[in-house]
Image (cartoon, rainbow, N blue to C red; front, side, top):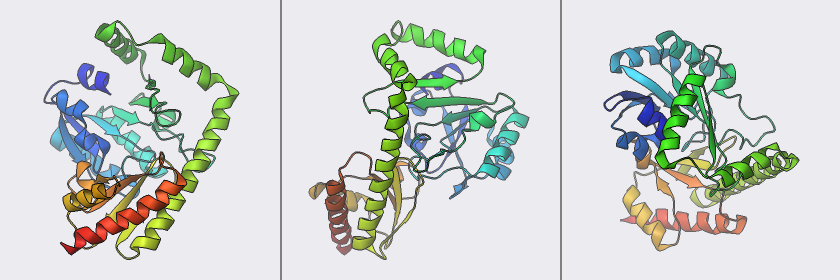
Length: 288
């Protein structure tokens, strides 16, 4: 993402992003001097029918999207919208960066079809990573795109530090090519599904009527909406006092009435304890 922002765009260029979105607060875009423009979205993803007008109005040079199990909402862009999105972007000559670190973390056997797999006009740059499906410390990613773009970014990457470390890339290649990789994915998917269901169950038990959330079909996150207009800053403070961390929704966009939970790393026991403590923090923050 850093290479794309630095090499394919210029300071002042406008980039369309989903809101809420991880890229709303991304230092990568800010450090490159890019201007972020919010793209309207709902539970089914961005609205492609309004995209053409937004591209023309704001002179968007690129779209950066997270179409599968989006961070922070867990949403997946609907198939019909994917097709229309590709048509609009190709017709107007605006490339799409498909940020897809979570696509393989589907709870079902078949993950969503990437935009790149549907791209017949070469408009999509596909970015993937092992950090979310293998190990957080395995910072190995990949990019699929036109040869000219790959060569340009490869040359820039080589000059950053004389090239990345070969050892983690070699380990990643062996891991991806092994039979163990597919067994690992199945185990990860089952574990994530069980943990997400446990978190929703515990939150429903402790916060029934005070929180609603969108049920994810994959990924690592649960997006919750709070009732009562409680202050996110107060809630975070009360949570920290009780040893519970979450990310306020305001980090991902202007809407401050949401929170994002990560259920991937905690154990089942910690999820149950954490949900109870979060409920305590919510009640304490609501009383002020």
